[in-house]
Image 1 (spheres, rainbow, N blue to C red):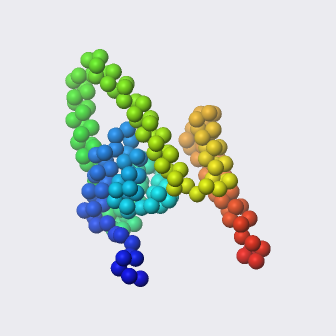
Image 2: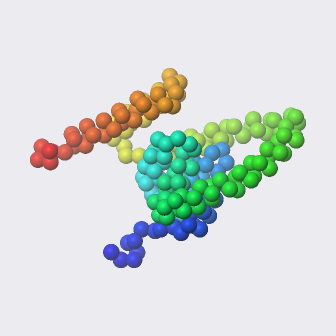
Image 3: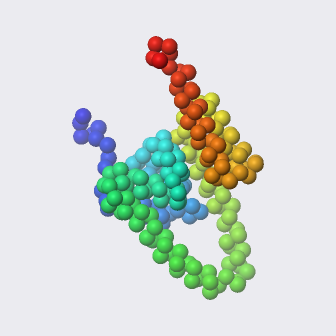
Length: 191
């Protein structure tokens, strides 16, 4: 394997700075920023790799993108890589949020301040919808993936079931359908 074929390994400082950039640019939630930085800007992951990593991170408790940075950082530098990534993700937003909390507490009674926060809600919602569309680019399109996607949407958005119940219903279904599909695609000689 040539040097150009070697996978890129970010240093601890690169993990810190990459996830700090995600934290600083993650307005309305850090998922759009995480995907942009890791896939488009830094090219540390492909669309498919990001979608797979993010999907895995959703099955652990805590913030999804924080789980992404812990898994990704640990992959390359163990616990110190995970720590560098998580500190990078949270350091600057935490400082800014504490400062903003003091400012909001001081000026919240002003109607224009309240209107400003109400006006940015569609932006945050649009960011989430846009991120979902980008995640779909990394998803394998097959009959069973579309079925699970639609079922998940209906269970959450239409029926309003809890996140845990939706996961308990759809995750085993997705695994079962994937196994069924791979078994079906395997010819009789492969079985």
